[in-house]
Each structure stands twice: as C-alpha cells, then as structure tokens.
Image 1: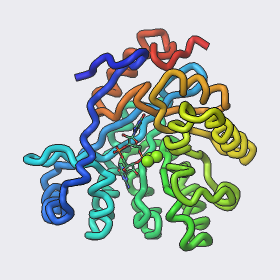
Image 2: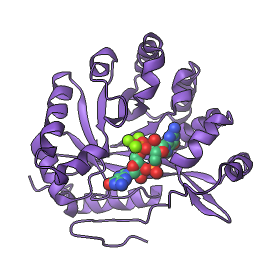
Image 3: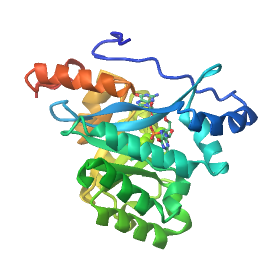
Length: 287
Ligand code: C2E
Ligand code: MG
Ligand code: MG
Ligand code: MG
C-alpha cells in the first residue's frame, strides 16, 4: 500500500531488496522457469516536469518476485539473463508489455531500458517496430534508454543503430550518464535526444560545497547540444530546488514516487487530474 513518507513524498512503495547475495547458480536455474511461469512483470516510475511538477512520463522497470525467495532486483538478474541468452526473450516481453500498458496513459511517454546485448543486436530495430505495430502506440511516445558502455565498442555501428531507431519515430536517451566512462564527446558524437544524469551527481549535491557546480555544467553542456536533461535519483526537496535552478527539464526519484504497478500510475494520474491538472503536492510546483 501507499504510505506517506517524509515531507512532501506523495507516494512511496518499498522497493524490492537488491538481493546481491542471491547466488548466481540459483538464478541461472530459476530464471528460465520464471520467464515461462510469467513471474516477471513491470513496475513504472513517474517522470516529472521540473516546471510545474506534472507527470509527463514513466520508466518501465522489471520486477521478479520469486515464489520462495521473494523479490530479486533487475541489476542482479539482468546480467545473468544476458549471459544465458535470455535477454532477447525478456527484452521483447518488456517492450510489448510496456507499450500495451502505456495505452492507458495517452498523455505520457514510456521509457524502456535496453540491455547492452539488445542494442548490439541489429534485430532490436525489428523487435521495436513489431511491438509498436502490435500496440498501436505512436512511436513518439516511446523513449529507449541505452547506457554509455554499449557505445564504445563499435561507435559507427551504434550511430547507425540509433539512426535506425529514430527512423521508426522513437527517441533515444543516454541512461546513467556520468556513472561510467563519462566521455563528454559521446554527447556530440551520438544522435541522442535525452540525457539521464546519474543519481551519483545528485548525491554529491548535498555533500560538497561545489557539488552543484558540476551538475550545472553538465546541464548547460547538454542543453547547448540540444538534449533534454533528466536527473535521476531525486530524493529530497533541497535537491529538487537546486536541480530546478540548475535548469534541468525532468526529474525522477523517490521524492516524487517509487516504481509501482500500473494501477498505481492510474491512481496518481486521477489524483493529478482532480487537482485541476496542477502539480502534485510533493513536486512543489505552483510555479
Ligand atoms: P535505471 O534504468 O537507471 O533505473 C533507475 C533505478 O534507480 C531503478 O532501480 C529505480 O528503482 C532506482 N531509483 C529511482 N529513483 C530512485 C531514488 O530516488 N533513489 C534511489 N536510491 N534509487 C532510485 P531498479 O528498478 O532496481 O533497476 C536497476 C537497473 O536495472 C536499472 O537502472 C536498469 O539499468 C536495469 N533495468 C531495470 N529494468 C530493466 C529492463 O526492463 N530492461 C533492462 N535491460 N534493464 C532494466
Ligand atoms: Mg533507465
Ligand atoms: Mg538510470
Ligand atoms: Mg541506474
């Protein structure tokens, strides 16, 4: 159930524990079964406009609840799914399900994460095209999230891949920016639409005197390159205020909402509508 948590948090769910200790062998044994038994499902985390605080999108996040062990986090099982060659099947499921569920939120965009192997495999373009056709959701409402690591190995091919995805009408975001190689030249080299700034930068905001300087510089650079800027992992009101001042366009984080089942998104949107389309309480947006 939703609980009121901390000043301004308008909804909060307990996230599944990242069961890092869950052993690899157990997951290898159980994952194929889980896929066929439909134990994998999607939760959605709202994405908020920095100005006005409205929900403008959702990010689909995979959830696996094992009948005996309980929740196993995607950061734990996705790398294993990749090793086992299961990511094609799982990735196609995620795209289809996210687009099916997105039909009920015609005003929102839906962001779907692609694993490195999915992006490297050229057949992703057909998988995305098929999922869009099946759902009837306009391609402009789909945002695909890729990570920096996948871009390095074969930059020319990755530029073409992004162009092929653009040709379908979808947009592409660079996820977790700043968490890995942080190669600023990528921003110019790859035809990206959105930059998702990693939450490590947000954490730095409160802990060092000049923590805000770096994030301001990244936001300015991204904007100069014509990218829309989303900051992930916003947990406090102070961070929200600083990030808005820094000029970021969108925010996502526990301050606003935790990932939750589709029905919770329905409820939040109904609540937002009831408020006359005004910002939800915690997003602090009567501006
Ligand atoms: P991500 O794409 O960067 O997703 C954001 C992660 O940060 C999610 O963790 C989310 O629950 C968490 N998060 C959101 N707001 C906050 C906050 O304010 N504070 C903190 N501490 N965390 C926050 P989650 O769901 O455990 O997912 C972890 C990663 O697993 C994702 O990182 C993504 O890389 C991967 N993943 C999740 N679902 C999928 C999927 O369907 N396909 C693929 N390929 N990867 C996925
Ligand atoms: Mg993501
Ligand atoms: Mg991210
Ligand atoms: Mg992340």
